[in-house]
Image 1 (cartoon, rainbow, N blue to C red):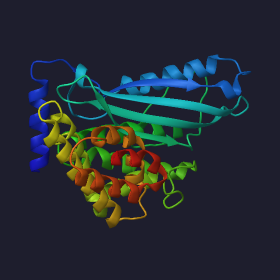
Image 2: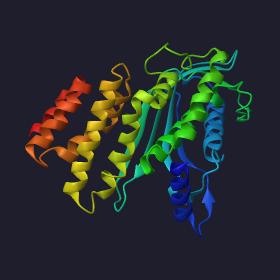
Image 3: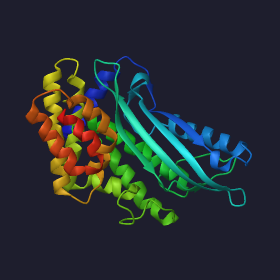
Image 4: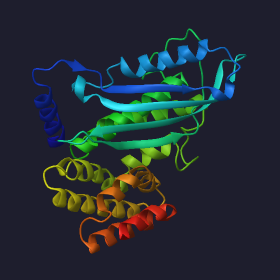
Length: 301
């Protein structure tokens, strides 16, 4: 309850005297090079429909100012398209970011490739979201990612503030599974939509959620004020990453985090701070994601 009150106060103060807007500022791109012989009308209609679906809808009861809308991208690559049954096989690269306080720098909050972004769509279809009756896989996937992005963003602003929003994404998983499309099924894939939200809300991964606030709000947002203290806060936040990996070693969330934060973390610590600090960060990152060791080695320089 205290977290809800805190979040409400933060948003109220941020929005005082301002006009409110939708939560997302999504940029949508459809890549159809693999099906270039098909008429372009359906793809143009699809891009327009998704843009409207994401950007013109108010997803929550929270109040965002125009400048606070969450910057995100939905890059959809069409692998196959059938005019016979209006079916698409595609993948989605979805990413979101947030500004860092007191700077012009924006930092990635989420980045992943959804390899099972399959759906049906006709040129004149109108995308409608009916959470009480999920019968369209495209709408379900877009809504899932919308709620996940909003929930993750809230977690970076106040400790575990996105819980209620993230639970909506989890409900979408449950209700969309009967549609029969890939990505929703429990234990079918350790990196699908079900696995991501299930792990994120798993009590054993609470340290990973605490990491979001510690890394962004306690760390990055203070870089302009005191670089050394901010870097130390980020190093401490990475200890939460280590603990979350130990608490649920089969979860891929810590690895995913290190994949999209790789360059940022290296730039923060490479040649900076104490040698022990860099060594500790290196050990954490190498243990979680040894495949990126060419980058982690830079921390020793």
